[in-house]
Length: 384
Length: 208
Image (cartoon, rainbow over all chains, first blue to last red; front, side, top):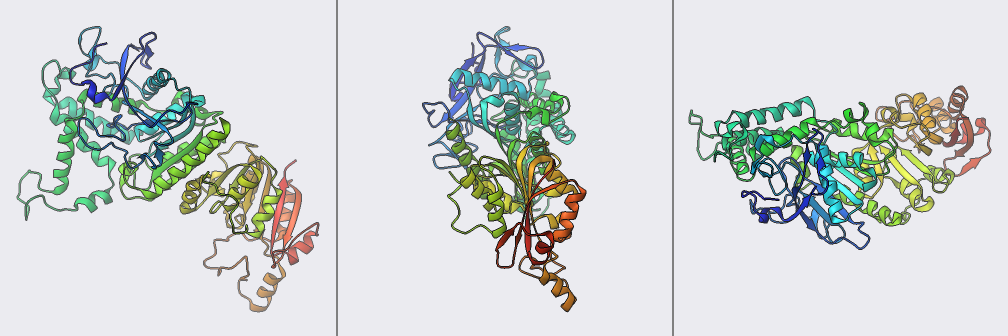
């Protein structure tokens, strides 16, 4: 299997080559295999292989959860939660996080070389779904010899994967923690994603998806996509608290279109740093996967049917100021789980930090997560 | 385990009486579970599979942080999601009088639970009657301790009212405990006695 030049092995952490004998059957009907999967692990798998925690990352996240990111050289994206003595305690659990299918951090995606043509996939990469991402992760677990997860956990798109895990592989998930997510992408969410995709596709450097072969990169388009999306991750209050109407490096307005306000400068910075670490086509594919997600539709219109007979213990968490995946959407998951008398906890955390709160320092969220995981771990010991 | 051994504080009287009615290893839903004291007690003492519903988000978060399976919700809206006979016992302690539709709530309790345990303050207690008769103002007692304008209690009833409703709904009263002002519980007393001398009452209900 060839690895493509933009993604040297150092980005991947660990690498598994999957789907060699039996390819991955995608929802769109295509088959993918062999394919690469970049992943990271933390902690030690116990002898009983019962302490594995799968962390599912969000749209633009990656497998570098609790260690330095090799591209940005920043700390992992969930170091507040994952580590020795932290809620996801790496002294107790064996933590796995893999880059999603379609991603650009080691797992095969549109930036990689299609072995059939010897050229980058670009838009010939098959359209993928949350279900495909999860099936690929299940193949990784098979590869690692892990039959059953102690816990699948993730926020936002990661939460969608957790729901998909619990629905598709109930016997492989002892506990599930979908955070700040929904069982389907709303029209509003799809609309925001479409704005981002149109920004990318409107950039002449996108070259109808063929920018790699033509030695170009739709930086401006991807940056605008990120800027628009970033607004949805924050609350109005959080933006106001951070920036207000403060001006950037100037005492008064200049009657022009520079980034005069701090919030503009901040968004431009978010956009420009994002393009250094993310692939535009990956962004198209992964946002599409989220748009397609509708767990109820896949079960005859009944979300409860997606969880019929489940024995998994669930903890759902939402944040008061999250308007991208509001509490009402999370509560629909709770109601569906109640309808099948599942073991479910549901906390709504009071926070003004918007959707991003699940990544930030929220002590009450961390305390409830610790309590849920500890109790679930004790229950796991009793059933072992 | 995050769930500690039984808390050093004794359970509230009605909760202790409720706990005695719950059988070993039962599936239990505690509606209005507060800080989870009863659930924790039942899990430790009777090894129940316990779940909770609580209105206050602070209460819910505290319960979950202690390792209890609790969701935010209320008796009026969140019971109808559950399937029939999902639990052996559904508990509603000191909450019935604060629900908007107590009749529907009681029916839901006995739909989703094989048995229901309900406790409530008795508005027929002699002190309540005496207070209203002599003072002419809304009674305030040990269990009804908030003035009329701040109490969450919107559907207060007497023991006799409750027994009549059970009759009407075809509900079997398996046990009735009458609890007096000094927290002494009596069983085997008449409805009339409980209605006059019970400050609160605990009922074990089932539906044939």
